[in-house]
Amino acid sequence: MSWEENVRKTVPYVPGEQPKIENIIKLNTNENPYPPAPGVQKALEELKEGYDILRKYPAPACDILEEVLSDYYGLPREQLFVGVGSDDVLSMAFLAFFHGEKPVLFPDITYSFYDVWAEVYGIPYKTVPLTGEFEINADDYDIPNGGIVIANPNAPTGIAKPGEWMDEFISRHRDVVVIVDEAYVDFGGETCIPLIEKYDNLLVTQTFSKSRSLAGLRIGMAFGSRKLIGYLKDVKFSVNSYTMNTPSLVLGRESVLDEAYFREKVDAVIKTREWTKKELKELGFTMTESSTNFLFVSHPQKNAEEIMKRLRDEGIIVRHFKKPRIDNYLRISIGTDEEMKKLVSVLKNIL
Ligand SMILES: *Cc1c(COP(=O)(O)O)cnc(C)c1O
Image 1: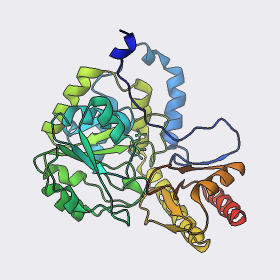
Image 2: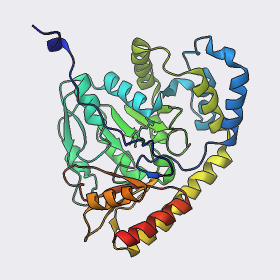
Image 3: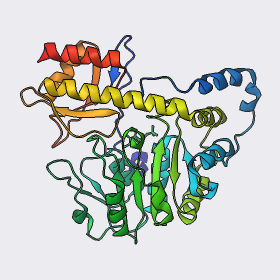
Image 4: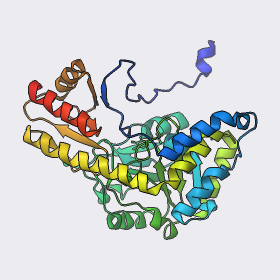
C-alpha cells in the first residue's frame, strides 16, 4: 500500500493571477484601485514602533475589531464573526452548517470556491442553473436540500437581487441554513443584514477586500442570529483559535472608523463603472446589469478569450473563465478613471 492512498486529494480553487510584471493595469481580481483609508496607513506606521504586540498572542475573540464592528452595525458581538477574509468565514460556515445528507444548493454560475469547499469537506451539493439571462429563479430551489448559498450580488455576473426578493426567498427555506455572500454589496446591492432578526437560519457574509481596499489584510465577517454565530464560533475554536493576527485587527479597525473615506471611494468606483459601461456599450459590448466593482461583458463579433489575450499583450489583465455558458464573457474589474480610459482605447484598437 502506498502512503498516497491515505491522502485527501482535492482540486483547489484557482484565484486570479497576481502577475509580477511591472506597469500593468490589473483588472482581474476585483481589487479596489484606491488606497485604504489614511488612518490605516497611520496605524501601520505606529505598529512599526510598537512591535512588541507581535510577541503576544492576539486576543482570540478579536475584540479590537469586533467592538468597532458592533458599533458600526448596531449589533451585539454575539451576532458577529470575523475571519481571515470571507473565504475563511465561508469555509468555516460550510464546515459548521452543512453536515446533512441532502445536497447544498447554489447556482451553476457563481463564486467558484463553493464547490471546492463542498468537495474538500465531503458535503453533498447540487448546482442549480441560472436562467438564460443569468438570473436566479426562486422556484428552482424548491427541492429537498441541506442548505443554500447565494452570492448577492452574484459573481461573476454582477447581478443583484433586491432585499424584498431575498426576504421572500429566505422565508421559503426556514429548515436549512441559508448563506448570503455579500462580497460586493457596497457597490449597489441591498444588504440582508436586517433580515437576521427575522430569520435565525440566515448567515450574511461580507469582506474588507473589495470596498475597503484591504484584500491584502484578509478580513471577512459574518452576521447572524446568536445561535447561528454561536455554532460558527464553536467550529472556529475547534479548528484554530487565532485566525486573526493583531496587525489585521488594529488596521481593520481604522478602516471602519473612517466612514466618509469609505463612502467617497465606493462612490468613485461606481461612477467609473457607469462611465466604463457606457463606453463599452458604444464599442458593441453587451453586459449584465452590474451592482459590483466589475463588469461582465461579451462582444457579439469577437471571441472573449481572444480579447483577453490581446489585452494582455497590451499590459491589461482581465479575467476569463473557461467554463460552460460563460466562456465568451470577460470579467473586468473597475480601476481608476485613467486605467479605464486606457482600457477603452486599447479595446477600440483590438476591435
Ligand atoms: C472576493 C470574494 C470573496 C472572498 O473575499 P475575501 O478576500 O476572502 O474576503 C468571497 N465571495 C465572493 C463572491 C467574492 O467575489
